[in-house]
Image 1 (cartoon, helix red, strand yellow):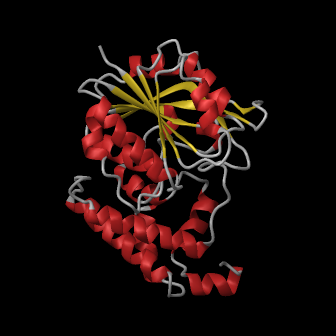
Image 2 (image 1 turned 180 degrees about the horizontal axis):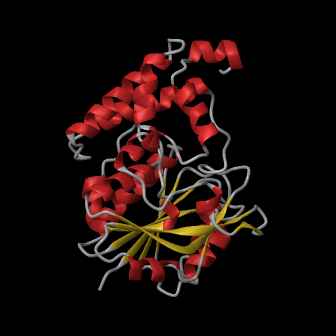
Length: 313
């Protein structure tokens, strides 16, 4: 029988952590292990965790220094690899959400031959009030996307909504330094090693508030976005064998990488428009035609021109 290991990252999470842990206790299909990486919290997070020691199969690992969201989950997955065996399952958890009581039961029953299964979520505010019935609709997330879209930075798998097979851990780890968000990397590895499966059920109440590590945040400056994209695509190319990139996917990645670099220093690049148009379905989320045209044209504009016209930073 499969065992489920939950990996939870905490950092100064006292505001919502007890509700999250209560929802783990209430699972109709309990986890056999809950590994918590506390990322050097300065509040009462660890004390709250310790108060659940008799109610959850907790293993709490305290970090001496704050290393950030990605590193905390990478550390937690490494510990999970030491616990998990072939046939076991891994779930990712955020400190501020509330799990539906049948989350693990539904995802375990649905995973089948897929490497990873993920559900939808209700969106709640800081007070726990449901403000949207579907995170997928709110964030315009598609149930299935091409691998090139994943390369381009579009992610349709939110970690806290997913369950994946422990056999992936050896392929997922180590998570490269320039992976922006851990669940994006996990999804890409899962896609290449058994595939992804989406279910329509809401399995989590996903909380949006002023301190989210991921989700609900304003877009960064254009210069920062281009810098992040350039590092991300460099990482994709450096890990082409781990991601089993096809020749066509490699060419796509190299072209997009070159375009990202050129946009840092050049103005308008009309010669790039045919390539951007040809790849529009993997470069952009579905939008109405007028918005798509704007996206295509803007992607052919570099930072220096954007600064002059729109005062982009």
